Image (cartoon, rainbow, N blue to C red; front, top):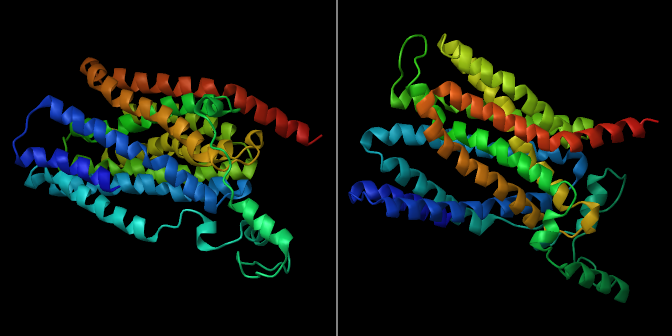
Length: 373
């Protein structure tokens, strides 16, 4: 987080230092991408350490992951608010904020329950709803004998970290990774281009200012917050992550068509349809990067190797990040042919994301049907 603040500050400083070098901006952007991408696998692993129960993982992760959309909202509003003082401040102010919060995280974040002296097995007994079980702390009884000492010693031994290629071969990792490639392509195209789109497309016959466009665009992320939570709740309810993701992806296609076709009629139409688009677009993106990644990183195929979680999460989110970089780039070229072409690209991307989930969704449906017989 501190390094992310430094790279963002470097971009903002270019305004005040009158830097116009393409090489500088490319280097700063690459550095920013490197340090930011390193954070997500770590935080998913941390949350997975604390909330590892699969039965409620989607709900917990959905609520937790709302921070991404809240951050997008805060970033858009903050950048728009200081834009009138010069675009450099739109980078510097968020840079100071994330660097300061990075220090807070360093001081207060406890990455694993065992770091707080908590017994994972005792915690599991309590969270599973057993009656009358006592939750003990590690080291609470130092006189239980040699057997308990060996057990604690075994718990302290870290398993071998899973290999990169080995993680790719885990069931479900590749399909969800490529699904996220296209899902994140769509989500980040909206993140980067939606304010520009609103600014250059009249709403109720009027063109909005840069500041108003930036503020209005946060409606998409508000929809994304509720979409992520809803996707998590639904996936927990039916016990089918792929089916839930596929459903949201499928419904996002008509949502995008409606927004493009009727979003300019009035402000109410624009807000309502933008919210709907954000709800369905960000739902599967949120679910895959959190609950799905945690499921895949703790599945039976790796026999509970907790050190696989960060690797699996990095593979899934890293593949998605390639799409996140490609989407806004392609939009810059395709938008010269009109915004209908851009929305067509987004719909094709969603359709391809659906293709990668067909087999997994089918397997989940068959499994549910067989379990009832």
